[in-house]
Length: 210
Ligand SMILES: Cc1cc2nc3c(=O)[nH]c(=O)nc-3n(C[C@H](O)[C@H](O)[C@H](O)COP(=O)(O)O)c2cc1C
Image 1: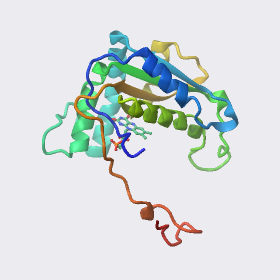
Image 2 (image 1 turned 90 degrees about the horizontal axis):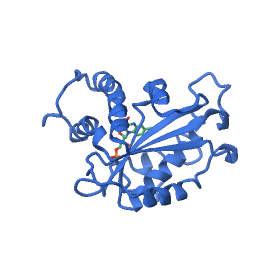
Image 3 (image 1 turned 180 degrees about the horizontal axis):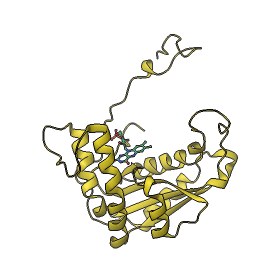
Image 4 (image 1 turned 90 degrees about the vertical axis):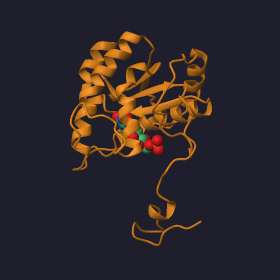
């Protein structure tokens, strides 16, 4: 959990099917609402399909860059930008080169959306698919394989469905880019300490200390 960070630079070497199978064979034990296991995984290695997915990702990545960072399409990952952003830009430019694209979809009929009646954005439905995706990330990390969880392709869901023959009732949950890393796998992630997000008894109670 402390070292399954996002890999941004990948080698072209293929990832063995046996390894992917092993990771999926463990990931399938993820918790999910009512144990309905609505997940489906498309293992894309075909170069033409990866290029098509890359091309569908780009406009949404460009929109994100503009809205979040004020960067115009075509902006270069120059040295004055924060390192994480630069690495994400380089990743987006080379997404098509990542040897395996795992497309994770979920059958919407299998989701237990217990917050659907609330007058706010629903969050619970995703809880029946993202623990599975997290298991994938942890499993890949344990095998020495890098991964990047992405969701910016999701606005292109209609095009992706057409490209990959995904049935109507399935939603796209993630594109997980998978491959052996260029250089080392991440070893140290930066996250807030427990005291900043865990409190005793009430939201505003005293921080939980160890
Ligand atoms: C729900 C979700 C969606 C994400 N979507 C993208 C994405 O579309 N593109 C991308 O480059 N990274 C994406 N990320 C990766 C995050 O940027 C990354 O987890 C975060 O910056 C922390 O980086 P680290 O894991 O290397 O510490 C996503 C992560 C999550 C959890």
